[in-house]
Image (cartoon, rainbow, N blue to C red; front, side, top):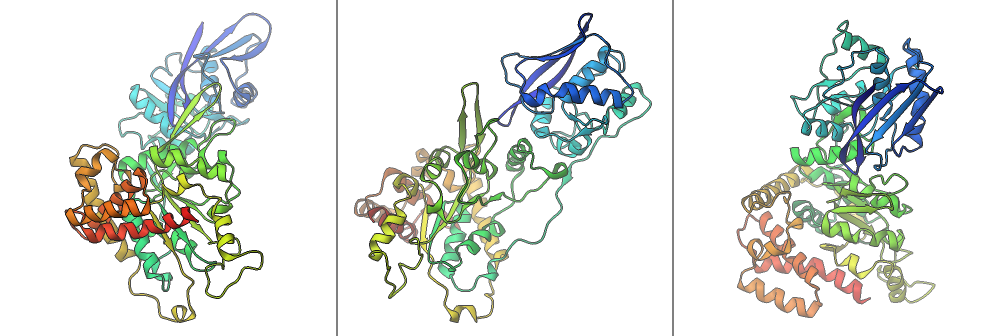
Length: 511
C-alpha cells in the first residue's frame, strides 16, 4: 500500500507541487528516500525516526521507501520532514488514512516530536489556495499562512501528538489569525539634517517617482544620513506589493513569527558583498539583497568600493525588475524592482573637490578620474538623479532644526504617487505604479513635454550626448516633477530641472 501526501518544492517564490509517496513493505530493514533529495532531505529520515519514537510510535522492522515525485525536480530544505512523517503515520495506522486528503503539508521536525518553523510557508499557502487544498504547517508559521486567504483551512500544530489528536477528534485546533508586525521605533526624520536643502529636494523627487539616485560628496557631508531617511517619506506598501515582498521574505526565512509589515524594505549591504549576496545565487539559488529590496530601497554606500563585476550585475534588474539565476539543473527567477540609492566620495581620499586641496599622490583631476573609473558607463546611464552633496559648514550645524520634516515631505510624495497610480491604472498597465517603471512605449503619451520643453530636451540631448535610455529617464524625471507640482503637462521648467540632475552623470562619464 502506498500513502500519498502533498507538499511543495520552491523555485524562486513559486511553490511547485510535490507528491510524497510512502510505502512500507517486507524486506531488509531500511529507510530510503529517493527523488533527487539534497542533504537536508536525506537527513530527514533520522529526524522522522526520532520524532516518531518521542511521540510513542516506532518504525516497523520493514523496508520504508519514500519517493518524492516528480523525481527530476531537485528537492531542497527541511520542510519535507512533516509530510514524510505523516505519510509513515498514516501507513502504520497511527492517523486515519484519509485524514491528509486535500492538504498541503510542510514543516521540520525536532527530535522530541515538536514541529519547528520553516521558510516559504506563505508561497506554499498561496499554492494551496490555487489547488483548493488546506494547509498543515508549524504553529510558528500559522499567522504567516493565514494571510493567503481567509477561506484557507489551516492546521498549525505544535507537535505530531497534537496533530494526531486533532485527526482522532480528541483535540481541536483553532485557525491561526494573521499577524501584523508591531510598529518599531520611529524612522529617522529629515528634520535631523541641517542644511543640504538641495539634496533634500532631490530625495523628495526620488521618492515621488521611484527614481535611482547617486549622491557624491566629501566624507561627513550627510549622504548616508539622507539615504537612511528616505524610508520615512516613502508611502506604505499597497496590498499587492505587501504580498510580493512578503513572499520573498518568506522564502528567505525573514518573517519573524509570521508577522507582516507594510514598511518598504531598506537593504544596505556592505561593499564587500559578493555577487551571489547582492543579486542572489549560491548553492540553493537563494534571493539576494536586490530581491530582498523589491518595492523598496537598495542603498549602496561607498559605491566605487564594490567590485565592478558585482555592480554591473545590477544592470539587468534595474531595467527588467527581475533577476534570473541560471544553474545547470534549474533556473530561478526572483522579482527585483527596487530603487537604487548610492553614495560615494569624489575620490579615494574624499577631499579632491574641496577648494585649495592638493592631492599628494597625483593631480586632483587624475585622482578623481581613476577612482570614478570603477563605475561603468552603462551603470551610470541607469541613474536618474545624480547630485553633488557639499560639505556642511559650522554655520549650518549651529542653526536650529528645520521646521519641515519627513511628515510634510511624505504628504507631497504620497499625493504625487496617487497621481501616478491613477494614471497607469487608467492605461491598464498592471504592476506599474511609478514613473520610474513606465515603459518607453508609454512615455510619448504620459510625459510628452510642451513645445518649449521639447525644444530644450532636443538641444540638450545633442549637447550632452544622451543615450536613448538617458533621454527616456529625463522624461520620466520631468513627469515626476510635474506630478509634484500638480501639473497635467510636463513644461520647460520641469525638463530643465530634470536635465540638471543628468548633467553630473554626463561630466563623470567624460572624466
